[in-house]
Length: 275
Image (cartoon, rainbow, N blue to C red; front, side, top):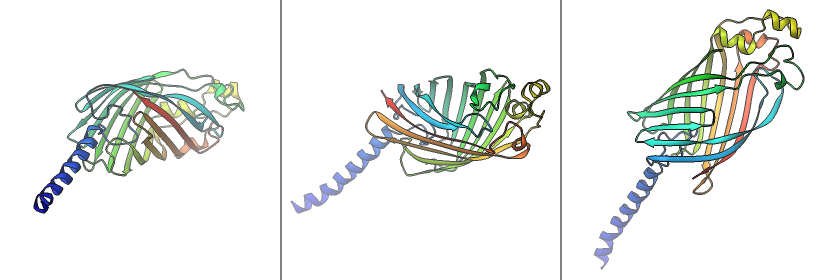
């Protein structure tokens, strides 16, 4: 009997370990990064997550005014193997994993634009409103290993109002494979002249209407910053997320009459229910 127990005990432990590994794999996200919403839990087919978040953020680029904003959160997703197609509010896109260490993403979304009313103190009076417009985002991430502990990130955001290039390096903490945990990345943002002048420039008509000095900017580096993401499940269906952003402006745009703070900051928290 003792000999039989000595044989069965290691087999039971091995089976338990394999069951745990299989359970983790069945919940595995396409890529285990907290910054990427993945409600599929490792399964092909449809997945839906709906919720809301509250953000405390800069009123506009360069603003020294801050305020709260409530935004919807979540997405409708369809997964097939290593590809996820999604619709998330005002964005529709595709995300695909290749060779375990390459992640590609393409998204069509909308830029909210800027309104004079965004400044409660009237700092934008006379500058006019910039309309919401479509923007196209192409992104590639390259992990140093299949566990996605460290990675490089490159993004291009193109719109009729100008273009941005974002380059970063990031890391995640913990061994979870379900997309929960903590993530931190360091980014550098570049802009073309159209985007720089859209956000920080003042043309002759705007100068006459606002009383601010005319200003024009060329392409170059826009900011350096830190992005933080946290995700955790509080039960089978409820997901809690926290997002933080700090970007410090560099170059001539810091001297724009529009710029009253040389940084942009944002902190958000929210809940998502996964069906």
